Amino acid sequence: MGLFTTLSEPFERLLAALPLWQVLLLGGTAFLTLAVAINIVQQLFFYDRNAPPMVFHTVPIVGSAVSYGMDPFKFFFANHEKYGDVFSFMLLGRTVTVCLGTKGNEFILNGKLKDVNAEEIYTPLTTPVFGSDVVYDCPNHKLMEQKKFVKHGLTTEAFRSYVSLISGEVLDFVAHNKNFAGNAGTVDITKAMSELTIYTASRSLQGREVREKFNSTFADLYHDLDMGFSPINFMLSWAPLPHNRARDHAQRTMANLYMDIIKERRSTNGGQRVSGEEDMLWNLMSCSYKDGTKVPDKEAAHMMIALLMAGQHSSSSTSAWILLRLATRPDIQDELLAEQKQILGENLPPLTYENLSKLTLNAKVVKETLRLHAPIHSIMRKVQNPLTIIAETPNSNTKEYLIPTTHTLMSAPGFTSRQATYFPNPSLWEPHRWDEGHNLAYTQMGQEKEEMEDYGYGMISKGASSPYLPFGAGRHRCIGEQFAYVQLGTVLAMLMRYVRLENLEGKTGVVDTDYSSLFSRPMAPAKVKFVRRSDGAELPNGFTKA
Ligand code: HEM
Ligand SMILES: *[C@@H]1O[C@H](CO)[C@@H](O)[C@H](O)[C@H]1NC(C)=O
Ligand SMILES: *[C@@H]1O[C@H](CO)[C@@H](O)[C@H](O)[C@H]1NC(C)=O
Image (cartoon, rainbow, N blue to C red; front, side, top):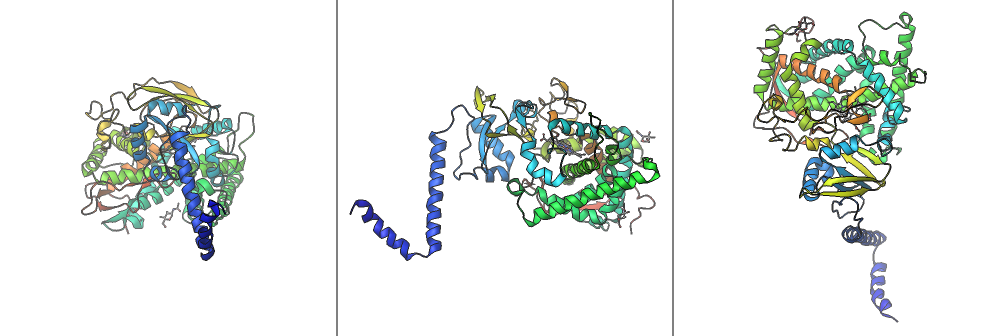
């Protein structure tokens, strides 16, 4: 009889007396405690001294997922203070290396194709939603060509027609939509803007047939497809769960609808483009890859779905934030209306693309909102080759780190756009800080060296040295920026003609940000008061309020 049996005997008796579930619970607890202990010991004593510092965490695998997920910027600022521009954290089993600051933006967004990769990270989430052979389900050079097709389709001619189509949808919305019923009331801005964004994007970029279908079949399909972007799909996009089955069904149905529209167009009027229809589908129907192959209908359909999804979340979240911010600043709303009256005339004629470009405060409101509320808070890349980065530490020294291929890179340009070094009093939303000579202006703006580069979709500014990059930079830079400005600018200018927004009684400021999804947005419900303006414009004939 050794010591061990003496000790283990009462333990065995205890186990025998317990029901099975308690044994399992006990075992599970012991296992977790051990895992936590190993995890802590490993972080304290056995870390890689060449790798970036690791944010301390107790629970293995989960790591810092909760604090990062609740408020990424709070997380970034706290760790920036401790570790400097570059540090790593555990995110659901992945070691993520964050590279902050303008140098960090440059390092990731302008990383070489052989060193950093986007498609491997994004494809599990995006391919089931968009469909095969487009965006991240194809080699990068093919994506570059697809981006070129889209960019070439966004002509001045197209934007001219979009401003009038979008204006029409806004008029219809303020006249007839239930969100703006009556002469005054409360409106859930996030909900209302998500509906209005779908109508405006589908009427313009997506085309007449798609817009008509959004009054019926498309809305439900869109909803099912959108569920494919729910956060649990970061891990479970392949799982045969009900929401994923609905997603797959919606993807097939929607792709077929687009292909039917293409066939219908080809068989009508000899396949001639209907004059005045400047939508993206007409454009894609006539595009060919460099090797001469025409864009297959299926790929055109899948690209249209990708554009719908990319545009919807970013624009609806941004327009909601614009209106929520404006509700706290009635003075800016009055200025916006005054700007239109002064530049376009007291009678406020129908808005045109040329007119829109002259409304500078209108554009600054969009710009300032994207500084604080850019919908994409984290951009990720997979490391393909071991990389070295020279990082600034908290005491302004520099240190070289080695980033192994097991890490995922994370860029957050929203960090620099919140830094006081660049934007004095950074948390203050102030569109006038973009005025020349304003005391809150970022004085270096536009003075960074403008390196140009063509990644395959036309010359663009590499631009990653700017602290303001809501549309990203480099080969994966957004191609929707101009469209977004036209859409957001038109919606804003038109709404300002008809309604005035105010915070609800007793509320100040804006709601918190909901970071739980792929795209951040205002925390629901985000309600404000609207009052119809008596000093704005009259609803034109055909839009009179019921
Ligand atoms: C306020 C509106 C928008 C914002 C803030 C925004 C932001 C961004 C950002 C940050 C990226 C870079 C992602 C990365 O590097 O991983 C991006 C890429 C992209 N966006 Fe946008 N976007 C907006 C609207 C749109 C719209 C309206 C469209 C479509 C018409 C669009 C289509 C795309 C596409 C196709 C890419 C390229 C993806 C790639 O090359 O990997 N975006 N966008
Ligand atoms: C969609 O329905 C609304 C409300 O019934 C109507 O005002 C609008 O004209 C319709 N739009 C299209 C494109 O069919
Ligand atoms: C507004 O647009 C219309 C039509 O393009 C044009 O005639 C008018 O001169 C524009 N006004 C301004 C101030 O740009």
